[in-house]
Length: 114
Length: 111
Image 1: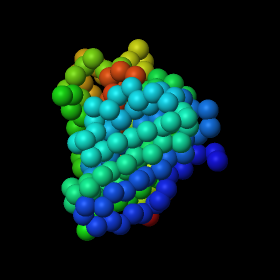
Image 2 (image 1 turned 135 degrees about the vertical axis):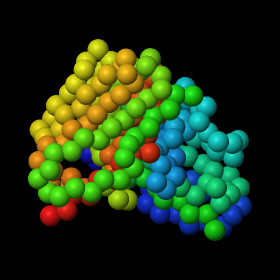
Image 3 (image 1 turned 45 degrees about the vertical axis):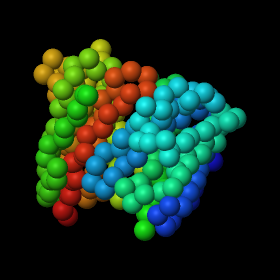
Image 4 (image 1 turned 90 degrees about the vertical axis):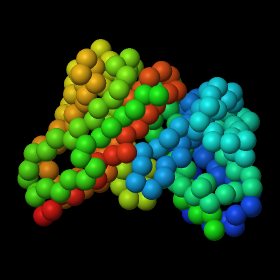
């Protein structure tokens, strides 16, 4: 597709369940970012990939959060044993060269933990 | 931790008015600064990217300035339209993967 695609758009899970969020970046974009956006706040950095390499995961809030990009294209953000504080919008962005070029964002996955 | 602050949090103006949105950052060692627009339920759309060597960027009715010494950026919107209603976010870029966002200004332009 022409833009960054994220799925699902909405996800409701019970506390303690595992969830997986998918991001399809723009074709050819080597850089991929995950962000977490709480209601009324700006996005906060979670992790960064350059091709298949996860170069920075300093923003992941706990070891329950795991991200991968095994073939350097599609990425999955997995949250294990979800907690209510994990409820947020998870945004994915891609660019052709880190932050030296503008990022293109997907519409996000709105995660609600009951 | 570098912080990015946006004032005001919300702004309502009549159609046709010129307006200024403000962004301040605590660390002047900024690499680039970027302004985004976010519509409800959507991701972010990049509006303007100002590199540290630049002082401003213009695109149509939008003009963004960057003053590193004072730690400030402004987004100027001329002749506002109802379609400009959205949340505007600024983000300081500190290296190739460190981008820190403000909480945004929610703009409403009334017809």
